[in-house]
Amino acid sequence: MAEAVNHPKHYNENPSGIECIEVVRHLNFNVGNAIKYCWRAGFKAKDPIEDLKKAIWYIEDEIGRLKTMNTKKYAARRRNKK
Image 1 (cartoon, rainbow, N blue to C red):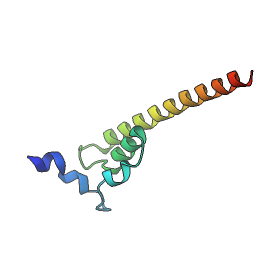
Image 2 (image 1 turned 90 degrees about the vertical axis):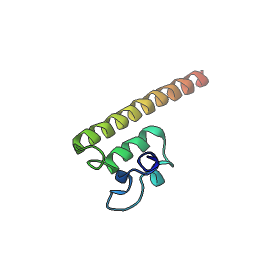
Image 3 (image 1 turned 60 degrees about the horizontal axis):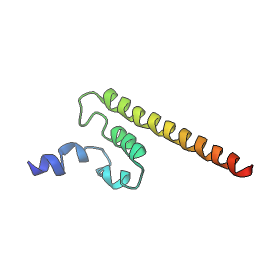
């Protein structure tokens, strides 16, 4: 059972042989999850398109987060110039 939780087969099915976590642990949540879904596309779920759609969802969420953050920074800069 522990194998299914800590090290499922699909974790190393990428041709690189590298576990995705070795890369994504250095990234933020959305970017890491997008890469994870691309990395494992078709290995965990039968339909790689579903995995890639999930990756797109995380990328779009990150774009929205950055736009909101940039809008707040811009507004703060404008307030400070007054």
